[in-house]
Length: 142
Image 1 (cartoon, rainbow, N blue to C red):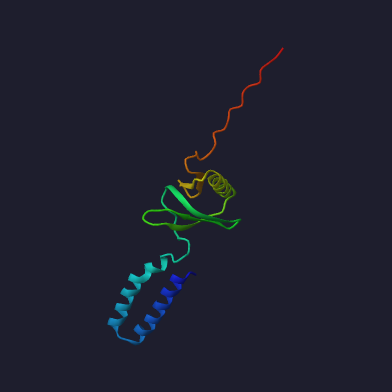
Image 2 (image 1 turned 90 degrees about the vertical axis):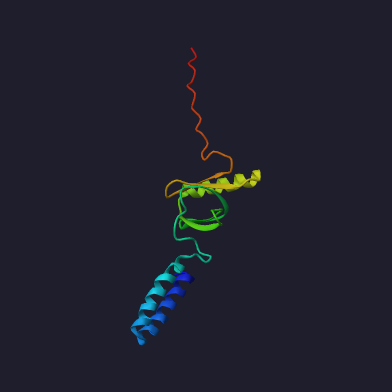
């Protein structure tokens, strides 16, 4: 449980105790305030956002891979950067690591594309995947 949810729960409990020993008007006011303040529990305060970003392409400002746990990514989203947590997969982790290494070597940045639930990573200005080379048929020599 993160800090925002803990603080909201403490507020609701304290206000509930006050409303229990108060009158009906205080109980109704408490219910309205609790409903209005409830979204504050979902505002991230240094924790990964509990939702996924919309489909699109984003610049990666920072990333951390926890093997077999999650991939944490700080994205340059609109209107401000946001921290996200994605499920771990070997493919995504490999793409991210390769994109970071390549971006470091070329002095560029890493981009993330999201079209479904799994993110894809590539160096900025590079195609997402290298095109596979067609194997040429062997010449028959007699």
